[in-house]
Image (cartoon, rainbow, N blue to C red):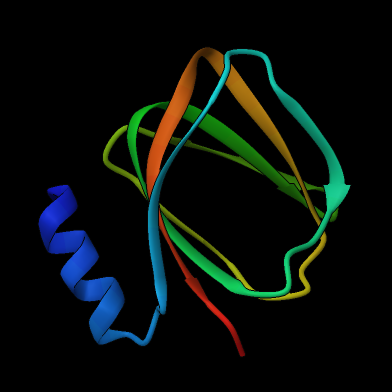
Length: 90
């Protein structure tokens, strides 16, 4: 899916904010949560999200979601990551 189509879908699903974000290789964000729902499309690189005891890696072209208030850890791969994300405030 391309970024333009993904952004159109985000807006149709009620995501109020849409942004493109990047994180440097090797970034580790400790256990935290957001006060908004997230839906994101990985444009380049990879991100591993750990929720509870389960981890999943998302690569270029894959979509991930995270519900508001859900605690998680973020680990960025060796090439960094760039993604387009929607934020929806409940």
